Length: 331
Image 1 (tube, rainbow, N blue to C red):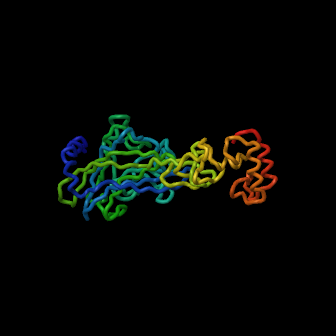
Image 2 (image 1 turned 45 degrees about the vertical axis):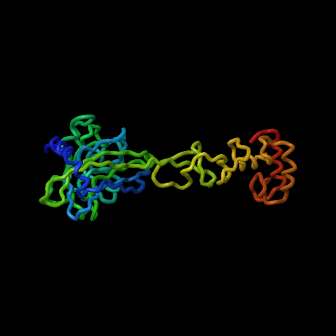
Image 3 (image 1 turned 90 degrees about the vertical axis):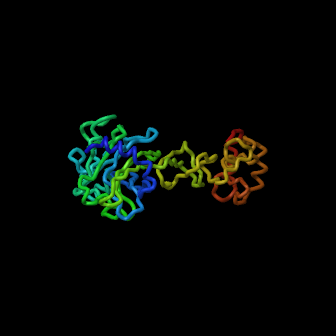
């Protein structure tokens, strides 16, 4: 297969592809867990607006802006992987994925349409063996070579595996690959890819190039007090979906006591909720005699206006003991 010639043709025809039937790449994702590892599974599709659009090959896969070409999980049935979830070994061949339930949902692979089954007719082109860090393993490796020319193709075009509406595709989208990453590996990765396709079985081949992005770059901050504001020093995680106990907002000024409004009357960076709970009822930065009258004014109340230092719902001697213990110190 003359991939160099195809690439040259692509450079001549991409500009005209905007008026053709390819409309862009679409990425869907879902989170799952396997072998104790939290995973995000990304599926990349090519979207079309015609009823018989058919992809023949994909090529020139390259990272954009230094996007990583490593870190992908595989769980295929190649002899060196044997159906074990790992990042050290694997293949991008869809025909080696194995079980539709035990392997396929957790395996990274590339395809020209269809499903990852033994009858899938997608193969790697010669670009996998030269340039960058490519070598003789072709696509039987866990990472993606950095040569910027990676390609794969349907070795049996008459089966229309790469056509919209065929098994494994949708009425508008053709499956191009599945990329499995650790859920906390959520930094955005952008890749460029060119496809060769026809709008029907007799039309001329057209080419189109576009980018697709995996990940979303979200950082979630642990929210210990559940007030909707987290703090980076308490812990962070990644992922496109907000996990329980985490918030998109960072910088809680009183991480141990819920204070969604983040009041800080004296502007010292420590939330009023924490200062009041320490016994500094006048918020002057120290617990001393001037706080005592304010405390006694709340005695027996529910502490809505301060004084309930142990947050048990009643201002009493137990709270006064906390104030006395903190005497002369700053929150």
